[in-house]
Image 1 (cartoon, helix red, strand yellow):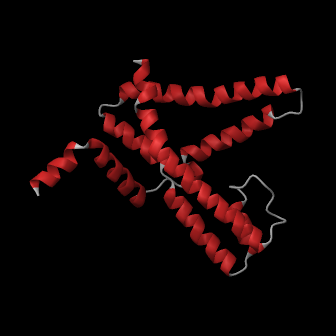
Image 2 (cartoon, one colour):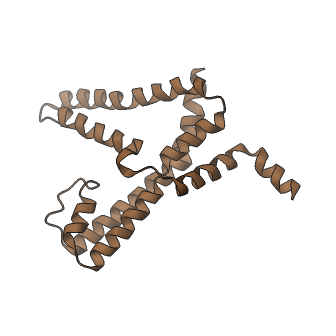
Image 3 (cartoon, one colour):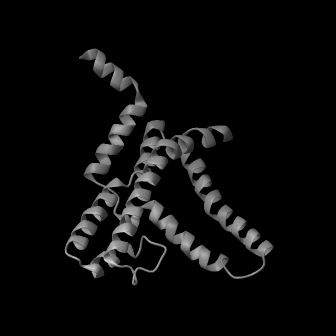
Length: 179
């Protein structure tokens, strides 16, 4: 038993992962204040200024500047927060908590299943409208189901990708190469 405890305690990454999963299970981020959603809302505001019908070169320049305006401040925030963390595992825990969002996907799936089972297209449209980049008014119940399945699958894929690749790369490589 002591060997198992020592092995688990000595591996900080495993404790960070289990801590993040437990914390996210007990107190998940609400979808409206999740940092990724806020970043997405900022991107939508920025795209309304950038996506103007103009020449190709102008679109390329404005798109590149918009991308830099989104990524450079996020990178600088990570870089500025690194020295303030007294335990690197806590920083990794915070990044993993930001990357996790499976409780909101689970909640959306349950509500969407109930709405489509009752054939309540209005409720299903209301649930999917903020998440889709298309008009939901003309979608049939089958179309709403397909759009919901696509949204949930992509949400799980993004969560898995962010947890497996984004968090370790944000916690280790970009920040450690600056020092």
